[in-house]
Length: 260
Image (cartoon, rainbow, N blue to C red):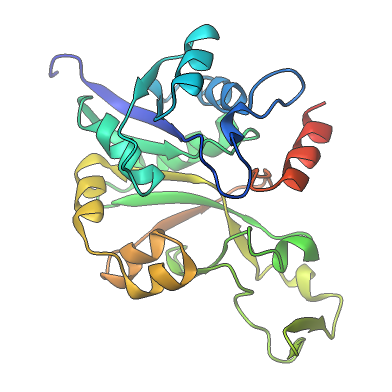
């Protein structure tokens, strides 16, 4: 075994300057900052060998240090959380790198384990990410919830902020508004949404980030589309949980109520 080798490294990117919710990692959820909720939940997964918060902000750095977490300062020039994760991953001798987004305070041990175990089942997988069924119309039409369509083997075909698949006989689009023609549409279990965790083979993480930004990625503002555009596969794993990621003040209020 190589010196200081860790099989699975989890990195939580946490930046201060979020566009939709300022200082998001520091938002209090029942007297505990959101980044602490994420960190402590990730630490519960016994398949993860090391957990590090990656930030560009001294306040976040100090908060993590104060609650006993491991944290690393990273460049302020990074365009995405994946770039921030990669900076940390370059310094840690590891095989699998998990990018657990810092706005997932409800992320669970079960979700993380399912992602990691998928790598053990198939050594040819480059990237694994969790998805869940959409249960509410509010999720289906909310652009903050990223939808995904998968093939019969649970590989992602496409990610979008819009409604996919578009069920022609049951949804109408009229003057920028979606109209549901049949209220049973969600019972068909055809709609899935993405959960903010990516598992990478370490070498593929660097390969992905070396690729030029894709056209679809620019349009949808979803970096996982770059992987699909260049012909690589993303394996999804279906989980029974439906965690809420915090993108807005409204999301924050929902999570506070649930975790209370």
